[in-house]
Image (cartoon, rainbow, N blue to C red; front, side, top):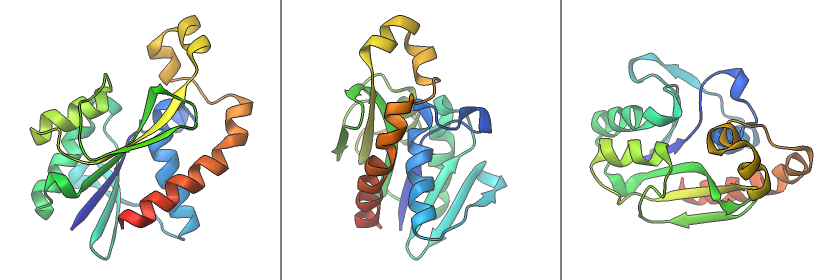
Length: 172
């Protein structure tokens, strides 16, 4: 069994924010593959089981994503090496995609939560670059991750999301 986890915050006010890049990527994959989310109230997540893969969008807030990840991992007996997380990363240039088999949180509070709840850094992750140093310096990190993509970034999203969908497809 595999678990694919998108990072983001619940609520429409967070749509198209940098912190919800993970949700946006998995939602794009779902749209392309004609999949629909189902609520999983016990584990506080949107989810879909397809074959031997479970997809989730935790409905906790970003900094507590590890709670839902751990609940699904325990219930379905999924080992960390079969948990693939998709998150934003403001340290990567916008549009850059970085896949790693393991590693530190690198300052990402969602990854810190998953690492804490799984008690390991050894799970694969896909980091989606949201970097815009000029804007980040102007408004600060918290406001930056909660800011919406600008118009030029929005124009690039379909191409980026198509690349991410192909990576997800290879993981299923």
